[in-house]
Image (cartoon, rainbow, N blue to C red; front, side, top):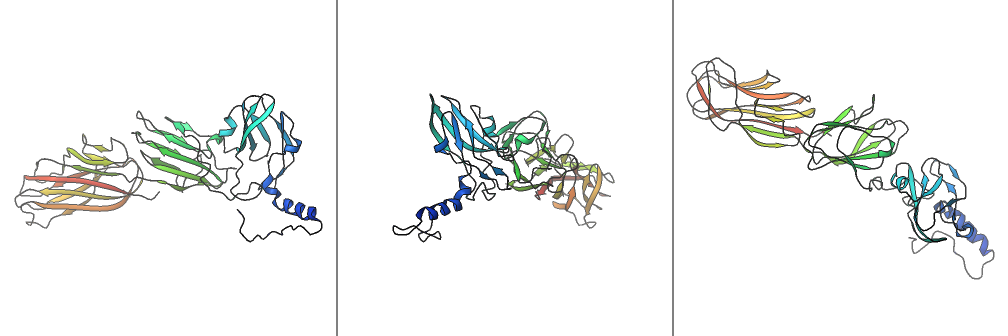
Length: 373
């Protein structure tokens, strides 16, 4: 829309050489006519269009494309070569990573009929590069239910990952030659397994070869021709709280694993991350986690009472009460913030030197992921 005061020269009734001024104005705006219908030279079934230049400088000549009678015709232009084609199939129409949408014609019997002009170049002339970067991610989502290697047809499309039977990888196309393209990934609410988004060999996603995702997470990935970068999306922190609902006896001088028999909550990850059978919580996604382990000594005076956090079956750290002070129901708590690897598991154990056996209760193991991607 033009401003009320135009920067373009205006024609008036008395001036000379009106056609010269008109032609100058048309020439100034001609880049916006790229792929515009040339009705003067269109003769059924050949649709004529105007040429111009793509944003990379590729010259497009005036041309024609042949339509099919009494059908919906999808007219597209190849994003690299600029070549215009028409088809009654919407395959290329929906492949917006490779083709620009131009027109959708509903032809009659021997006539062009009606059409929709869907050329969009973001307000810049001649197919310029300035546009809403997410505008291409509007197609119907592509369903993924198992191990998938995406190819060039995946660019500028949203993909929804679902499944309940097994974890699986989704491998991205190579970044080479694909600068400026995007891929969207959405984890379905009903997904109960893990999806590992994997870069091609030797390539990375924000510095990592893989990224693990779970239900309700979203990632919009941008390729700059060298690497993948997450430019938008939603991450859900993994968090688990496991508890002991009844007392447990701890003998003297014996490190005893705390029997965690209930899960207060387990958000993110998968249903097996809180393992009550083995009294442990699994790390499914590498990163930084805040951990709290708690053992409550129910009564008595004991020496050397400890709350111990164990990593992969070995002691990670412990808090020891001062001797003789842990009477009645005093919690013994150990906390940590650290980086953990996928597959690590955490558990809690208790220990007393003398004065036992000691009863423990209200014991907990809590972990919460610190989101960084």
